[in-house]
Length: 434
Image (tube, helix red, strand yellow):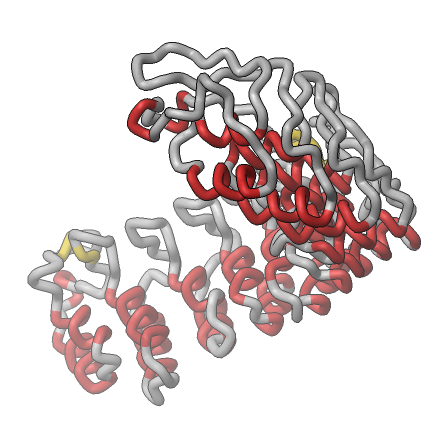
């Protein structure tokens, strides 16, 4: 069989079979029996382009414990001319695969000793260094960075836009890895493909220590990362969304971030906390207010933090804002209070907070806004609607309507007899205030 000839996946070569079993005796006897002109050491399977060496590496990685003959098998194949840089159907090399695993540093060194290149990229444009950082093996990372030409991989982004440094932020125990990458030239301010820089990713991962380390190495904590999906955001916004009050406090008191800094959507950190904090974090809301955040900060349409807590259904954040004195009856430009958003988006628990703890006016009426449809496609004229009316005209609002009516809410003649079957089925065709 010629060197590049394809082996059928259903009929692999003897060498593939021996490699998959990590059978050194069979590998040796197969190699010894092969005529030079019919050498099959680099034959590839038809389905996934695996050579025997790649099959050996995969079998080794799939074992619960390192097979005692695995390294000798690898050494034997490599010494007989196995292509250590062969790529499978995903363009992964043996080095990519071994670099991903903590306990295969010897295999990595052995592959490099036999000519494996540390700067080959796979179909995702990731290098073995990307794999090593993602896998979290500091020994492998240090070894790879000692190889010629590998430092250029610190500046190579994979198809998701991630550099190796971006991948190091996902684990809370990676400070030494981050430091090592920075020591070898990684840029602490380089943004990923989604516009997220390392410090923003560390903040999203709730890793205060990583944020502090990056700051000490020159990361700009006041810079806003740009994202085509979500506009701009800084580390304070990220810490708020992550629901990490200690990180929020450090960023404001020690790093100089502005507690009411606006992003590209004109949102303040408190707006993010009220509507989008992970785990409905009342403590994050409380921390920001203690640091001086404006509870009545408005965006262009007049919505305030409490509107967002109501819109997104965050009862803990809503309760904390009410406790701290937020205006429960504040209106946006269409006359919508937080309670109207609760009605439209069916958040009965927030309704209870606003009414029972905040004394919200249940009978307030809106002046306008987006119009949901009836089943026949006719739009509702919502001018003069109460929160109960708004809950009634969107399918699934029975519980919220009940909470509002029990607390003094009323329905207009236009909505009191409606049932879900009268309403438009597609939520996407209902009014969307956001």
